[in-house]
Amino acid sequence: MLNSSFEFFPFMKKAISIGIIVAAVAVGIGLASPLFYERQIDEPLPVALNKIEEGLTLEKFTNMEDSAQESLVQKMPEKTKAMIMEEMAKTESQVSEEMSDDSVSVLKTGEFEGLVGHKAMGTAKTIMVGDATYLRFENFEVTNGPDLRVYLTPGGDVKQGIHLEKLKGSKGDQNYLLEGIDTDTYDTVVIYCQPFGVYFGQAMLS
Image (cartoon, rainbow, N blue to C red; front, side, top):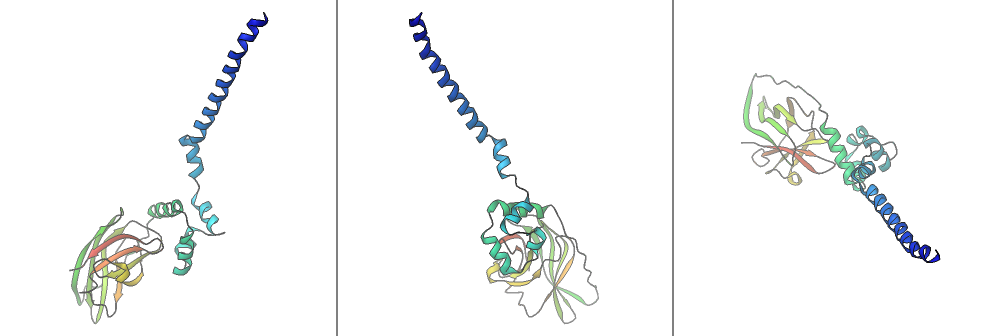
């Protein structure tokens, strides 16, 4: 009887060891499962922004001065940037600016195209109205983004370009005054996300 108990004990130890290993593997699989991983990264945008700076909201971020934006972007995780882009893409800001046909001369035109996975469409024109020159967008639409700007550039290079102003709307006709800009040199309109340095669309004028 003593011998049979002694023989059974190693098997029992082995069974317990196997049970512990299986349990540990199960816990490991559970921690590494997609569901657990999603819980770790599925952080709402307001929470993510508040971690960067207390009280920071998407509206505050998009309306900040450039220097303040740059400071925040330097410490912003890539996933937070992606969330901002995704949230802004869900919205649109519409504008409709008319331009009288009286005494309007069309100088150059170009069609918008999207860049870096963003949508952009419509027509860009440089027009003369009296003594003033304007850049006009017609039937325009672009994927919305944080703090989009309008640049007139040589060949699409924002670093060498002239910043006109903030984009008035992600959809609709709009006008931008051009003062003393040589449109033969600065021949490409660029829609540019200022805080993240991302090109959204462009139109080459000819």
